[in-house]
Length: 407
Image (cartoon, rainbow, N blue to C red; front, side, top):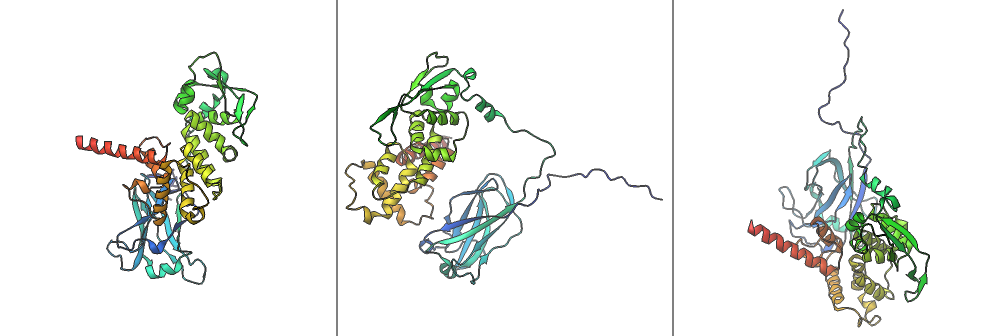
């Protein structure tokens, strides 16, 4: 009789894949497809988008790619992993007719693919260009990008996350952990009529100077560690100052709070150099503001006064698209000269397809989001007018070239 076999624990080489996620679908719109360049090998790139912790973009060749196997008269399309880490994922492109569901849908189907950093996967001959032109919706080509990947396998052990941000928030407005005090309120501009001022009850806030020095430089300059007297802060509502201070300690200001106090937060964050909070509030203000012929000029002058480049870009786009309604109805006599240049840029950019990315060295046509991303990636200040951002990137590129020549 054979001896019984005792089965021991399995041995694993590498980490086993987790369960497959659900499919995630993103629509990518290429506006003005018929006007995109049709020369072979000329691409149009989508903005980057996030999925499964990676950054992706779609690269479209309206006139076909140059790779071996690409046929004349066919559209090529590829999905690129823009993150520095590789990922294994299933993906497919789907093109549907916008109105006639009985018409054939074009779909790529792939087994799991390994996307290394900055590499693309796709179809050389996705569909004939003449056919794609019949699948446009008001001139727009809409591609569905479907992705799914393996979820991370659950670890048998529990590993806690870094507690730093949570510990910092424990010190928020904690008198025992603070070395400076602010007295906020007293006189605040009325939101309904900025010429009027109202009295408010003052509120005391406590903070640690080193945190302010890192996150609100102008506020930290108003005090010194250990000052016994409270520093008076006028012109800011206590509730808005509380949000600003909370943000400096690593807290998050909710979407509702940003929407309800966008301009007040921008005012305070701009005053005390809490740049990221200012830009968050600006993004909300840009999204919620409907630009019209009647309010366009007031919004433009306000955006310019606070260096709200994203908000200003939205207004400039409105001007470029509605010039016939604006001419004769709006006076630009009081508009600073630098804004006229921005308006002309918006008009020129409007003549290009908005799905066509600007060349990497053509800063003057870049969207504000692209300019800010480049500045952020280089560790440069992202707060400033459009002209200031372009100038800063230009200076940085020149210094990089000089350094390369010296080495």
